[in-house]
Image (cartoon, rainbow, N blue to C red; front, side, top):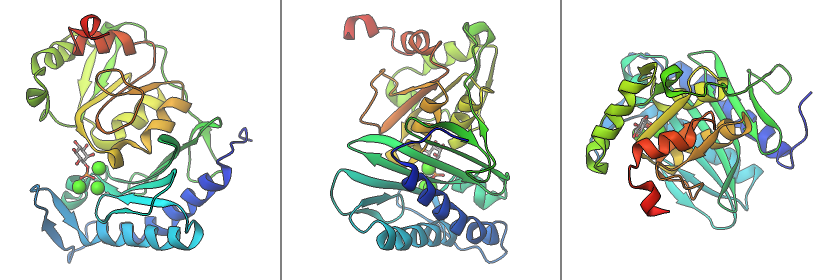
Length: 269
Ligand code: IPD
Ligand code: CA
Ligand code: CA
Ligand code: CA
């Protein structure tokens, strides 16, 4: 039995939304007739990305007509303090190549704070979720769930770090600091996308970071990491508003990683 959250009903709805698109996206995964387009930023988008976002938007307009919505493929609608944030398929490059590491990300942000997050990865048979004050869990439903807890690794030499791609560190001006960090941790992996952050919540990875991320890439991940006992900030250590880049850790390692990635942090504070 999970502790109650004032966002229980919203969490329940997020699960219903995820349930309703899982079968749809799975039916398009590895489909011979998958339609792939290239967006202006030269990244791929498929009919499955668009159909999933449309289906979620349709249900939200019926169930939460007053709430605003932001989705990767169809942009922003509505105003107000409550906003649903959708990444219909996170990991589209995996999806188009038949790699099962992709997920539908659904979040509710209230007054700028991500308070509900559901990450549903049907090709992996996994779902991670959290609501503010309730803890973070893994499992296909509210009833059958395992509580998540970050690791207690306390030194970089024992830590596992996961990221998505090397692009962006150079533009941010600290590729050398990032590469130095990867040399000093116990191991580095590029699990990528949502998966690095969900593994921080599970305690299997201790540090996940990314120099280029949008709000819809991370909104659902924030409550999952935080409710599991981790910290989620920008690469400069800000707790929000989220967008741009991300650092998630088991909390213990957070300030040390911030200092490693920002040698001038003391001057900035
Ligand atoms: C991408 C993933 C990836 C990140 C890219 C995103 P998409 O999202 O989140 O990890 O490095 O910047 O665009 O396009 O697969 O939803
Ligand atoms: Ca994404
Ligand atoms: Ca996407
Ligand atoms: Ca995309």
